[in-house]
Length: 140
Image 1 (cartoon, rainbow, N blue to C red):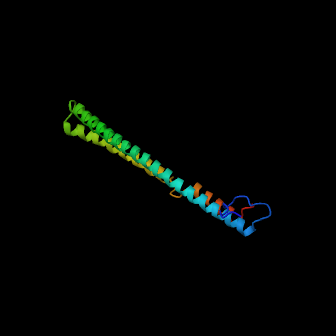
Image 2 (cartoon, rainbow, N blue to C red):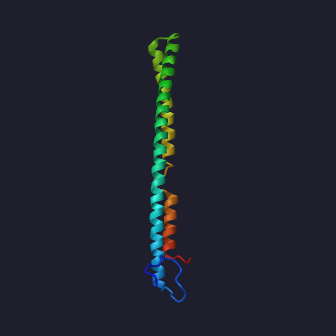
Image 3 (cartoon, helix red, strand yellow):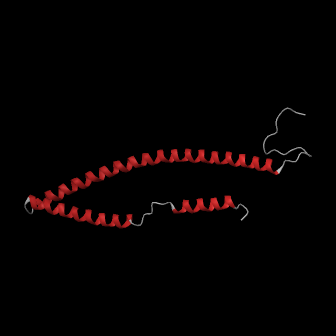
């Protein structure tokens, strides 16, 4: 006989049947290993995607600032253009009122859309319930 231990899950030589408890033990160990590997893979994927998302968010931030500067200078140009036709104070007040209306409309739309957002990940919760049900009754 060889002194090398058999590989878990490997086929046994003829005449050496494993008991059901030994088979379940091997399956459980394999499932635990598979689960750990899946968790590690998910962590690695999340780290990679978080890095990408962080870089993209930085670019969005830069674009937002640039857009802010464009609107600021367009507003200044509008004030100066209107100041050629009327008093500068009234021109500034008109441009400010326009921006106030834009802000109010955006606030209302954002508020309405936020009310439709659900903080609970519905699909994930449903999948977890299905997995738990399957784990309790794997033959169904």
